[in-house]
Image (cartoon, rainbow over all chains, first blue to last red; front, side, top):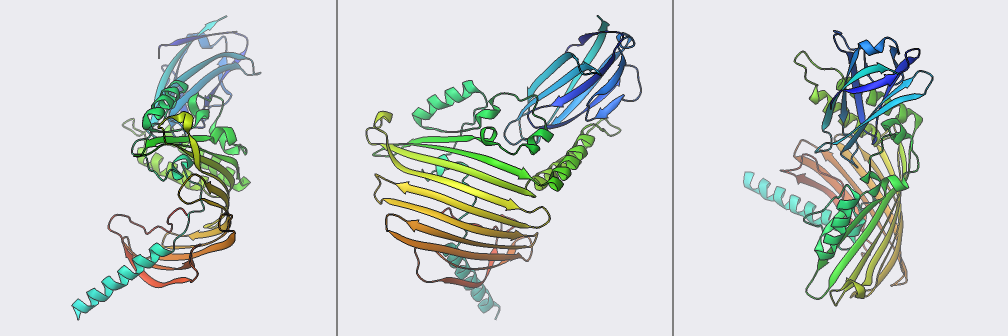
Length: 117
Length: 318
C-alpha cells in the first residue's frame, strides 16, 4: 500500500481508531518512523497521535494483523480512522483483503504522512 | 486359552457393534445443510460462492446438476461489525441465513433440493461475554508481539483460538430454524417439478457456562408426497448430553405423532461411553426406536477405533 497523506488542522488534537470488521479479531502496532519503540499497540481506539501542528514532520507506520476467526467468511476488512479527539472524522482508509483458509492471519502495513490544511 | 480369549473378545465386539447400530442418538442438532438431508445425498463437490456474481454463476450451474451452499450476508464486507458487536448480537436471522441447494438426476427423474437454515437467536451469558472479551484480548496481544526474529507465535495464537471456540460454545442459549424442500420432475424439466418431500426443524439449545451439560429441545415436521411411501409426522423431544474428556453420557426422548399411520410412537436412547485409552472405549447403551415394540438393551461392549482418537456418541439422522 503506497503512503497516504492525511491533511489536518494544526490546532487540534489528532487521534486514531482502528476497526477490524467482519467480526474478525486483530491488533495493530503504531510506530513513528525513527522511533525505537512502538507508539501504541493492541486494540487501537481513540489513541491520540499529537497536535495537528506536530504531525507534519512525522511519518506513521501501522502494522495490522488479523486472525480469521469468523467461520462464515475469509474476508478481512480493516478501517484506519483518523479523527480529532472531539470526534470529527478527518479521513478513513479502508483495507480489504481475503485469506485462503479459516484461522489464517493477514498482516498488512500502511504508511501515513501528514500535511496541514 | 489365549485363543479362546480372542474369540470371546471378537464375539463381544461384534455384539456390541450390531446392537449399537440398532439404537443411537438421532442427532437432535440441526442438519448443517438441510437442502441435502431430504435428498439423502452427500454432494461430492460443493460450490461455496462468496460474492453475488459467483452466487449467480453457481445458480446457473445448479440447473446443470451441482450443489451450492452460501450465506448471503457475508457476500459483502461489514467494516463496522467488530467481534465485540458480533458476540453481543442476539438476533442473527439475516446474518446466519444459510442457503443450501443441490440438483441431480436419476434414471427416471431429475431432483432439486433447497434448504434454509438460520440461528435466529443466540444469547451469551454476561460472564461468558466477559470471558470472550478476555480471550479476544489475549489473541490481540499475541498478534502484536513478535519474537526476537520478528515472528508471531503461531502455535500460541492457534491454541488461543481453539480456546476461544470452546468458550463460544458454552454459556449460550440459541434458537435455530431450518426448512428444506425436495422436488422431482419426471420430464427432466424444472417446469414440471413436483414436491416430493419437505421438512421444518426448530431447535433450542442451552449450554450452561460452568458445566459440561448440553440441553437440546427439538421440534420437526416432515412430510413426503408423490413418493412410494407417503409419510407425514411431527416429532418433538429433548436431549441431554454430558461430556468430559473421558466420559460421555447422552439421553434422548422423542415423541412422534405419525399422521399417516394415525398413531403416536416414541423413541428413547441412553448412551454412555468411557474412553479407556486413545483407541479403546467401553460403550453402554439402551433404548427403543420409533418402529420397535421391545426395548433394546446393550449391557456392555468395547469399541476399538484405529482411526478416530475418541468414540463419538451419536448416530443416524432419524
